[in-house]
Figure 1 (tube, rainbow, N blue to C red):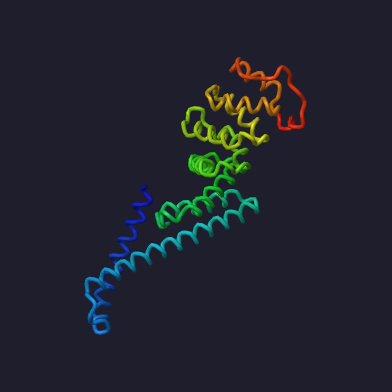
Figure 2: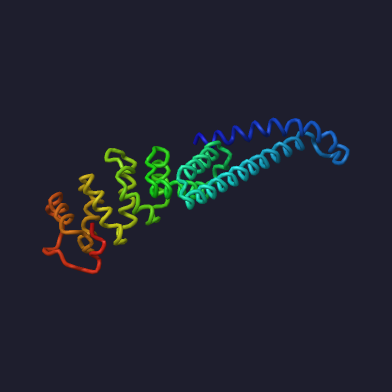
Length: 245
């Protein structure tokens, strides 16, 4: 919400600084051309026009700057310069935080920025608060990104046992990927680490057991945590067992 107010404040200041002087210059010249027009109407129209153009211009500049920094970050990452890649991504984040983006048009830009930050953070173990927050935000908005979800589940440094947001994200991923076999063992491992035995956890454990994607040790841990959970008597060897952890 604070970015919305920053954006509106910038637009109002620029509109006032440009629109009012421009109105005093253009309205007297417009009167001979449009004698029947009312000066207040012309003034209102001009101020609205400047306000709209200001927002469009601010948004365009911010988007181009962010895209440019993301391109630089990808270039540095391919060149094995993780430090410069991180700097470029943080600069892109700084541009985003200026509030220049139009609030109702920034969805695509946020996805590109947080997606780039999440991929970089997980690939290079950048578990600083800003990158962890960006990764969590991206996965909450786009939980179907299986590659990023899998890497997040593997990284202990990106997960806090006592953080409600992480617990909420874990539940969201479990719901989203309940039929995605490669992620089930990772989800089960994380749920067991949290000692989760709520409804969502039971559903996940049962899906894992029924899909036969767990190791015998993990299977046993689930039974120790929830003895009455539905399970098979044997641990079969199936094609899915290559997902075991």
